[in-house]
Amino acid sequence: MTRTKFDVPSPDPSLPTPSGLVIVDKPAGWTSHDVVARTRRLAGTRKVGHAGTLDPMATGVLVLGVDRATRLLTWVVGRDKTYAATIRLGMTTVTDDAEGEILDVADPGAVAAVDGDAVAAGVARLTGDIQQVPAKVSAIKVEGRRAYAQVRAGQDVELAARPVTVSEFAVHRLVRTTDDAGRAVLDVDVTVTCSSGTYVRALARDLGADLGVGGHLTALRRTRVGAWSLEDASTLDELAAEVAAGRPLPVTSLEEAAAGLFPARRLSAAEAEDVAHGRRIGPSAADPGAGPLDNDAVTGGFAPDGRLVALLSDRGHRGERTAKPALVFLPGERFLAPPEAPRGER
Image (tube, rainbow, N blue to C red):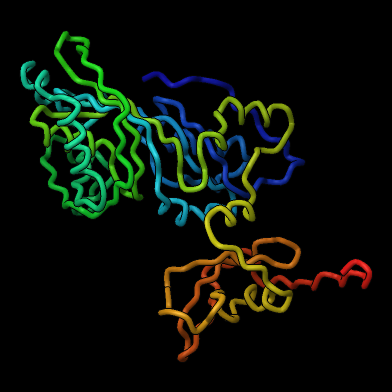
């Protein structure tokens, strides 16, 4: 596909470098790295990364971190995601999507025999906690090399199945049609909500295999990543227009981003200072003695002035539950307690 071209304006050097998340509606034909490169120029910094690759064919929500917010991307990547997709039943491709070479074409009679009940049954078998073999043309490393590089070099790649969760696999419409070569196919419009690491292309492949006619993906649009949806996203043209007008790149601040990812804990000035120096504080759990320790639970620790000080993780330490700084954003900072309100205003 041909990428849309536009001039990328330089940011006003008098404006501070933004720090936060940028939610982009990725255009078709662009790689995720292309979007990162454009955003680096718009933000005036190389410190930009993305949370979760979208294939060039795909469009939709791509979460970028700018400056200090790149440190939050590890947690964004792990959030579940929702997609609108079209699966074409009747043929397989080397990439499991429309950009790859066609491998096999099903008999027209076999495609005609696939009805709504068969599709619904096949979708049900791919819903829930499943074992999925990732798409071979993917960035997964096999013996130190990317799988897609080995496939493109003509090598056969075997990827191990891994557990994923498909919490929603809803069928909206079935359309009997033909492809550009006049071959009979069945297009299935679906919505998929899944865990991190799930390949929607692989779902299309596996649905087609289950129904005996083969399948691949012809359209994919990511509509949500965690707390962020298309309603929160801007196009690259819209971002460029903001910078061209002399305004800073619009970002979701560190504080807003953390609030969208973790439970919030308001710290006292003394607690915030301890955390800023890497010291443990009292547990984040409301009842420290209730239940087993959850070493995966993360809380956002906010200073009295509202700034994000650190991410905190409840841990067992010397027989006690404490909150340990997992990632400090304001190292060595000192904090003032908020002034007391006049007695008449309490």
